[in-house]
Image (cartoon, rainbow, N blue to C red; front, side, top):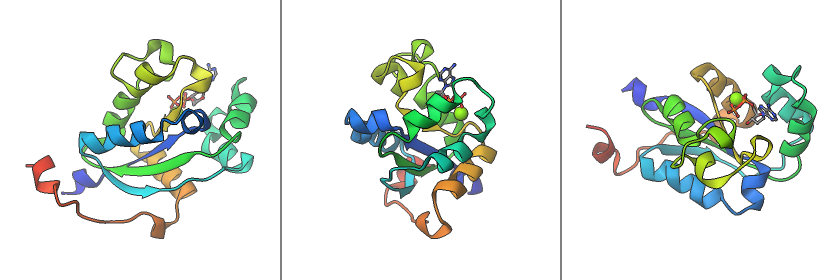
Length: 153
Ligand code: DAT
Ligand code: MG
C-alpha cells in the first residue's frame, strides 16, 4: 500500500552524535516498526545547512543554528512507514525540550532548544525537499523487511 511507503527525513544533530545517542535514536525508530531506507555519517557544509533551514533564514537564531549544525558530523536518515512524518514528529517531541513530554526523544535526552539533538521533517513536502537535499536517488534503498507482515495487517 502506498500509505505505508510515506517517507520522512530524520537527522541526529552534532550534539546527538557527540553525546553517543545515535544508537538510541535509531533503536527507537527500529523498535516502533519503521523501515530504514537511507543513512549516512557526514560533516555537513554551512551551505547545505542554509539550504536545509532556508525557511528560517530571517530568524535571529539562524546564524547560530547553522554554526551549531555545521560544528561536527551528523547522521541523516530516511525512515519509511504509515504516517511516519507525523508519528516521527511525535516521537521527537516539541522543538523546545522544555516542552517535550517524557517518553519523547527530546523529552528524555536533552534540555535546551539550541541543543535539541534531532531533526525531523514537519510535512510530507518538507520531507521530500530534505531527502532530495541530503541523499541521491540511489542512496535511498527500497527493500522488504522479513517482519513486514507482522508490523502491518
Ligand atoms: P523543529 O526542529 O522542531 O522542526 P523548527 O523547524 O522551528 O523546529 O526550528 C529548527 C531548529 O532551529 C530547532 O530544532 C532548534 C532551532 N530553533 C528553533 N527555534 C529556536 C529558538 N527560538 N531559539 C533557538 N533555536 C531555535
Ligand atoms: Mg523544522
